[in-house]
Length: 229
Length: 318
Image (cartoon, rainbow over the protein chains, first blue to last red):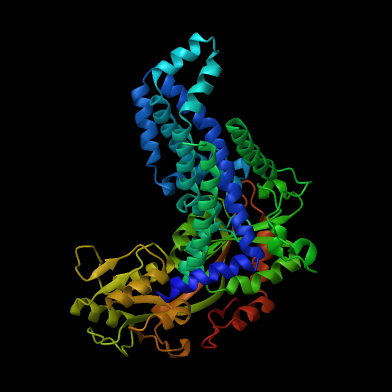
């Protein structure tokens, strides 16, 4: 129990002392997960919406794939991305392994099914009458899509939030493809693993507290997108 | 109103993206990190924060070397102690990927590291034989010890050989915790079982293969009153948190350990540049030469456990 209380105080101390090593880790966590989320959102929201609205061939199968993707173990994603980006793998020439780029790739693969799948579910929940109405007012396809997305925004933002939660807290994939290199690919979650492994339990708890606080602030910001609801 | 919120959110994300996407000239929007301006000497950590995303491509002029190694060399603090000297001398940053020995060797075998520092002699020799490295170098050693519960139900305290101790544990069916993770420590344990003709399997009630790191395995042993094999360094670093465990074979100092089977040799190998494209061969060779040089060897011996003053690694380069 000592470690937990000590961890809380250490978290506060770390934040107040503006520890540069901590800021570096926090900044990298936000950068990697932020970019991964942006990419997953720009790909996943339109695709989820399209799947939810259009009569796509084999939608059932695609849906099953997406929902299965939501349950992908991050370690498996990490191993897959590692083998792809390895110097012995097909994309080794990129030189992305053990860099933040590799971590972003892995996190996009983790977050994309969450964003696309939940967006699809949200869009399917929108009353079909709205689409008829918008179309009868002479809306283009894109305007129609936009109207439906706005109507479904609570669910869509929840999809983005779920994607963010999935990757900011993820450790298995970033550990494998990033390598937890100090000053280069060390993020909050891998730093927590390292400190646990070396017995620095209080510091690990402190980083956990900071991770939660960050996720909380980020989620508040994203929830504002839902507007009054 | 809502539309502006959406746009604002996208704008923030886009800003984050552009900060990352590899435009090296303008400094990315920094979090409130004062050191770059206010502190007289910016730390390495603060500088690294401004490094663009892709290290390999973006730091065109910046040399860096990837060292894949076991958790013990990094977690003990040894690499943090000696590497700054190399980085200064050769003006080359060392990226340490600290993982289990099994994974560290895999990373080397796929050409994803430039140098490999591990402790599993049999696999190291195979690594060289298979052509992944041209040569293996001795750099340092320490030792393993057998720890167990204070009441010592298998009566192994003071036994001269690890094999006798293992036999006693097996006879008593006393709870034993194995790393079970393909690490160098796990390999050493398996070698000892092999000498007495026992192949531990999950059907043995008393044998537990954890698949975890040394720290976790020691904690579990402490909780369950089990025997386990540990490297002395990790034991020294964590013994204060393991009140139920004591050293049973190997003594309190490496000089008391007469058992050859418990010696833990670290081998250093530069990955063969003929096998893979993109290996930083020149710097890898510099690194090997530097590690076996008398100055670095002395530094390794000077690195001591804070609590006990014992060295954690003993240099033995030829």
